[in-house]
Length: 114
Length: 113
Image 1 (cartoon, chains in turn purple, orange):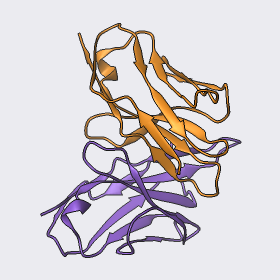
Image 2 (tube, one colour):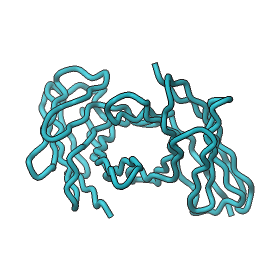
Image 3 (tube, chains in turn brown, blue):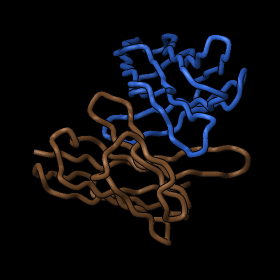
Image 4 (tube, helix red, strand yellow):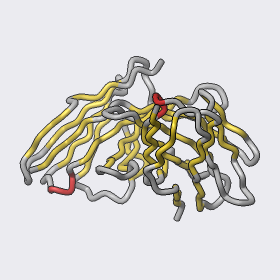
């Protein structure tokens, strides 16, 4: 059981503000990914962190940034919020157990930008 | 670039009906393929996966076979239940370095008693 948690559950922000979303897991995993899921769409990859370094990014501007901490918890920061940033933000940890690869997702943070 | 295409929903079925949700993909190399399910108000749960051609993933009565010749990974279940009502996402992980998943747009399934 990976027990991925995210906080907060819901958040309302105003255009131009900044927001920080958090992700953690019960068991430490050294790789975490963040995804944005707009309403009615599939998740879109934002970036991935491995051992506290960003090592992959999707088609998102630099105002989307992240951090990963030594305990492998992670943050997603979004500056200068835009209305189109309204979405469900999901983090996922990578389980490299055995010879398989699986991503386990948290419940998400729903961000509304007004 | 890599992409996933799913059949559009919603799919509406009666309980105990047969389910098929089509998924095709475009990718270079040998991707791994996944089905995720999202229940209302929740995040994504991995339903099943297949990592090479002709592999069959299965879980909770759902099955999907990795067909490289048709670049498909269709989801099937012989007898759906009301509790299967959710949104289903097909996804691939490319054979490149990092663990980026590429998702389809999702197919909403509604099962009625």
